[in-house]
Amino acid sequence: MKSANLMVMHAAALYDAGEPCGVEANATKLLAADAAAEATEDAHITFGGFGYAKEYHLERLVREALLFRIVPVTPQMLLSFIAEKALGLPKSF
Ligand SMILES: Cc1cc2nc3c(=O)[nH]c(=O)nc-3n(C[C@H](O)[C@H](O)[C@H](O)COP(=O)(O)OP(=O)(O)OC[C@H]3O[C@@H](n4cnc5c(N)ncnc54)[C@H](O)[C@@H]3O)c2cc1C
Image 1 (cartoon, rainbow, N blue to C red):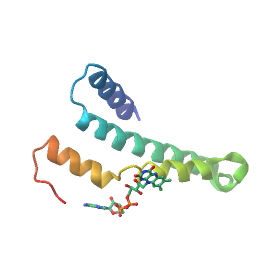
Image 2 (cartoon, rainbow, N blue to C red):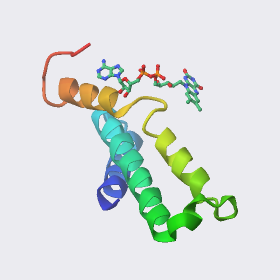
Image 3 (spheres, helix red, strand yellow):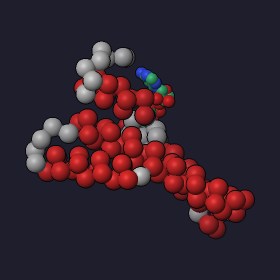
Image 4 (spheres, rainbow, N blue to C red):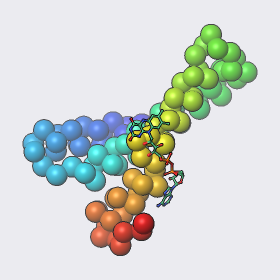
C-alpha cells in the first residue's frame, strides 16, 4: 500500500512537471489495484462470515476492488507496457 501511494505521488509529480510518466502511471495502476484488492480481502477475512452480509458493504467493496484489476487494462497489459518501455524487452503481443 505504501509503494502504491509513493508511486502515485511520483507519477503525479512527473505529470505536473510535464515529464514523460507512462511507465510510472502504469506502475501506479498496477500497485494501487493490488493494494485495493489486498485491503478488501484482508477486511473480508477480518469480518469473517459477516463479510458476506450486504449491510456491511464489504462484499460490494471486494467486487469493486477486483474491477481495478480488469479495467481499464489488466495487470498483464500493464506489465507488458513496463517490460517494453522500461526494460527494453520486445513487445509481447
Ligand atoms: C465496469 C466496466 C466498465 C468499462 N468501461 C469501459 C469504458 O468506459 N471504455 C472502454 O473502452 N472500455 C471499458 N470497459 C472494458 C475494459 O476496458 C476491458 O474489460 C478491459 O480492457 C479488459 O479487456 P477484456 O474484458 O477484453 O479482457 P481481456 O483483454 O480478454 O483479458 C482477459 C484476460 O486475458 C489476459 N490477457 C489478455 N491479453 C493478454 C496478453 N496479450 N498477454 C497476457 N495476458 C493477456 C488479461 O490480462 C486478462 O487476465 C469496461 C469494463 C467494465 C467491466
